[in-house]
Length: 215
Image (cartoon, rainbow, N blue to C red; front, side, top):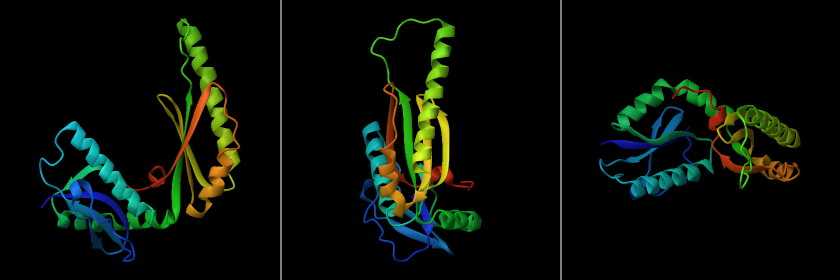
């Protein structure tokens, strides 16, 4: 029977397993050595149609978040479907050392995300190619400075920091301990953001940007 894979955690019996996942299917843990993978049955044709796919994706992420509130997780992309539980067990056995190492390193850690973007002008003036590039360079430099402000403000709480360019601006990722979440959020409020920018802080999320495994 095909199964839908949600995430991998350390094998811990005290974790409360969500009662149901996608399509109200029961969720169970497949244990292999030091790891466990949470899965539910997958029925062919159960996610046909855009509305159904969207709702299924929300159910998937709710299930992962429920587990993430209790422990570090390595989430799968949605939808990751495997032939059966035996294939899950074989996958866990093959990648045991790398996943065990990653989960140990990220135990009790969470990821916060900061999206820095330029505000859109209501009626942007026409500009030549040179003027446009100059504007983009100035805007990018300003967003880099804002990102640096967030990083400096939170450096007491952040274990690792990563950032990369996105089509709409910059995305910054901070890795911190769960216990430092409140002071981290307080430090975010102290950062000055340019009137021409928006900055949105979201999380906590599984620390996917800081994983060092080959899925």
